[in-house]
Amino acid sequence: MVIDVDGIIIKTTDYKDSSKIIDILTKEYGIIGVIAKGCKTLKSSLRSVCEKLTFATFTIYYKKDKLSILSEASVINNFSNIKKDIEKISYASFLIDLTSQVYKQNSDNEIYDILISALIKINDNFNPLVITNIVELKYLEYLGVMPKLDGCTICGSKNVVTLSSDKGGYLCSKCRINEPIISDKAIKLVRMYTLVDINKISKLDINKDVIKEVNDFIDDYYDRYTGLYLKSKSFLKNIINVKN
Image 1 (cartoon, one colour):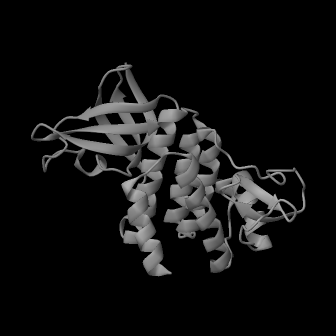
Image 2: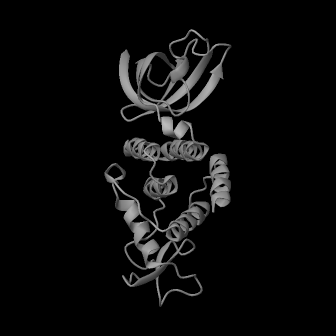
Image 3: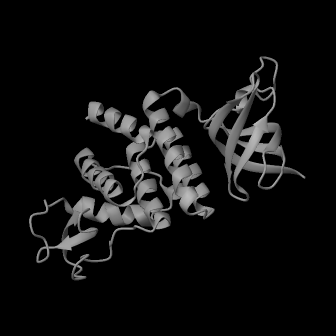
């Protein structure tokens, strides 16, 4: 059957001389594998829309559990600000790769909404590291390894003083042994990140030291509990280190 579906291209693979196989993440149908016939030729109307990070309405000859065929596409957002900035491209590429891995473990359609919302905010020049951290924390729920953020991870006390990736979340002063103390703002932000609706973010005014504290916690937590090791993350870390 022929369907029109909104989606974003998360992977492309060259196919024969002039075509590509593209993976499109959609809300309604999950990840659809599609052949874009002849899209690499100069005269093809599909040439400009068969690239990773294309967010569009795709007209597809849909075959469930088989390769579908792309007929046409109408771009919804070309993410022009992302595509002309190497830093933004790096964040977007990481988010797409991360989303693909998370979706393999949990196909909840809210994952699609989170990704699209995040890419729009990055394209609108919101701090890409903050937006990425918000997505990373939200995805931990779908990976089944969300840190404990409603009280001390050991005793449950609400009087928390720091975060510990090793202990799995908040710690109070009595349960803390030698974990470094982080700022109250970072403690509050981590929980807020899990609750915030990305679409409703209108301003991000966060001290860079607090941003670093949150990012360091998330990086270490992912390394300890998710088993996800992405090349795009390593590249992104290098960019962040150079910038800082």
